[in-house]
Length: 386
Image (cartoon, rainbow, N blue to C red; front, side, top):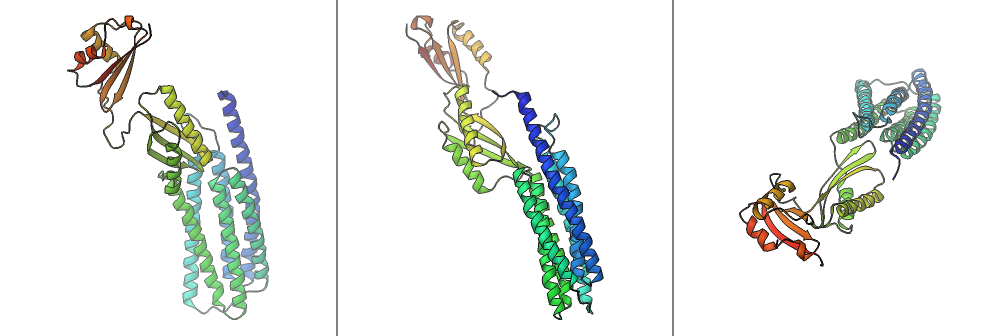
């Protein structure tokens, strides 16, 4: 058994390490975005390229998103506390939602402005060759930071960092569009530059919508895919001791998966055996999906998915002992009473160490005594060897 204090400490050390890695890659990306943004805005303004100018604005949105990532990562990687027993990963989801919203707003504004210019016509400015240089630098720089950021995001299991990596790649895509449109404008199709600006703005809107929609699905507890859910059910059903599986419910919190499952086992096994069967199911599910953080399993003695649940009005152990005392007298001290609550009835098993210890209590006597009790199901008496 692990020491809970040391386990908590190691968990927090891991979270701190992840936060440092996220901060480092984000700061590097922020500096690169700021430098490229300045270069592209200045070059776009001086050398008549609206597409490069919009691409520069895109780079500055990367800087803003990097600030969001830094702030959110610091909070979301805190250890669980009394008010947040599952951790703070949902703050990361909210940060991704905010980042996506920013991209949609910026992209929509830029698309509208350049659509008006495109429809107005009269475009005669031809971009200069420095636009090609600036766009090429952007493609190289953003493709490098994309791979670096995505690698870190996967290593620390952060959807926000991975989202930020894809945001960087959209900047590389948009710079490719700038390169192609600039070549076209230099060949006489000046309107291609403004059209490229609209395309880049639409790219920004698209990636922003993807981040926003994925975050919304997580915040409303959308479950895993049908394929993954079926895989987990199959693992549970194939575990030795499991008769059936139902009410498998999943949800995401950041990159982690939380799930609840009901496992149907034989009704006559012990509590400890049922728990052990559940632990085997947990182990199998974790082997299948390594980002499962928490599995809450419920052991069922019968499949109550398609039939009424056992009524809470059935008598308790003490109440049943009182009824037996009134009907047949006090049970011998050496006896052991086992109860099974199945199909809204109570089934009794009474164990004696030896036949001469039963005080004449038999299955028939118990059945006759309890036949007028609506909750009574069956009775069995077990006698040990003398």
